[in-house]
Image 1 (cartoon, rainbow, N blue to C red):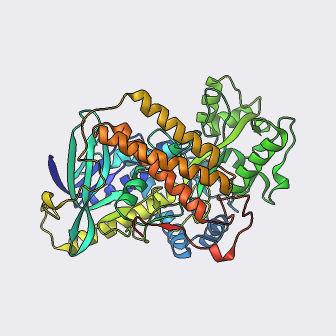
Image 2: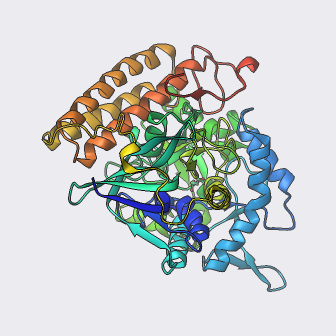
Image 3: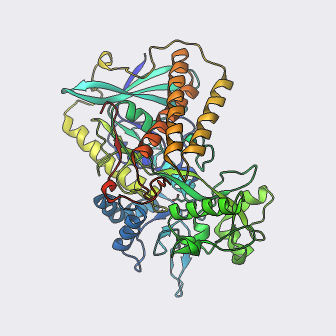
Length: 540
Ligand code: SIN
């Protein structure tokens, strides 16, 4: 197999990965492997913004308090404090790199950042670029790293598994196996450290705000390699995605409620005041469950988000993307309420890391949605995700560079000989024949439907046990498919989806209480004895 050696391999080209390389590729050979075009990341689709204490009216204490309250008893306070304290500096870095965020003028004509509001926040603190903040972050970062002398980006290259070897008596990540999706060629990249920045797993659900790429690859391969994975039961459902036959799962940003949007049932009745003192701006888990309950109670397929009172001009300027997309579908949101339903949105758990992005597997770092830093606990506070990706992507870069300098390994020298790398579990000893694509498409849809129907916003033990047995079958089937072909990216993705779905279900089954995003009608209350992370690790 062709083999290359670099200092760092970064899996994924969203905000976490780009923040990392913006530090490392000034000093070390850094390679980004991304499975589609470089700009195709979860980041790109983030509408709302970046939460951060950037105004004199706000305090780090309040941002930390809101984050911890939303996290329902599971946030790690040290991680939260790091996030809120270092966040403003990372936002300033991004602005210095050229990100253009929305601004406004105060009474004396001075221009400053316009700060939006979202659910669970006690203050306006969301830095945003109208309703396409992620796109703007991605644009600015890609432009900033474009000319870094020691950066190489390889597109359409799917990392299929981590390369492992015994180093100083410890199982260590020494690189990755990757598949060139265009040619079907396999490649081994050896590195001093690998950074997973591969985003989340929304695509394991039928209805999700996430793009096609979000198949949980990073979590799946870290778990197969033996790294600890935490809190996978906490899948966040975004309360408001468009309910439309052609626009299903298009996100209607929480910023819409932040600007005064009101949730109503079909007959115009408001309901959020019955569920939480913060009403329409309650934390996401509460709003998603309330919408679910109202739909069931009334037998209606959706509820409505009403912003007609904000006026056409304001709506077009504040939410140009949402306005335009709805118009394309024949819906004028300045005139009519928006039909909305919840959809899978964000993975609060992930590969367990310390505050420097180190996982439990030596040589492996993780940052962004793929990581579980302890910041989100059982429910992520809105707009803390881009912030987390920047803060911990930056910290991981500093730590990885420090480790690389301390290792004393001469530049360009592989951490191990290619022959010492284990291919265990990577399917690389399989045959060549690809199964018909129809089989793949059907299997994927079936898995997604199981997750939607059995592992959704409201769960119970019977549904979870049924899901577990069905997903185990999928896991076996994908391994059989892999034995038939080792050059088809779809099969590797399907294997990842099945592995991650199983991690979600196993974690959900092990939490016999309701907390944050995990609501089980057989165990409807929180149990103080279970106020800890759910950690799964292969072989333990
Ligand atoms: C949104 O715009 O509602 C999404 C922001 C987020 O998920 O934090």
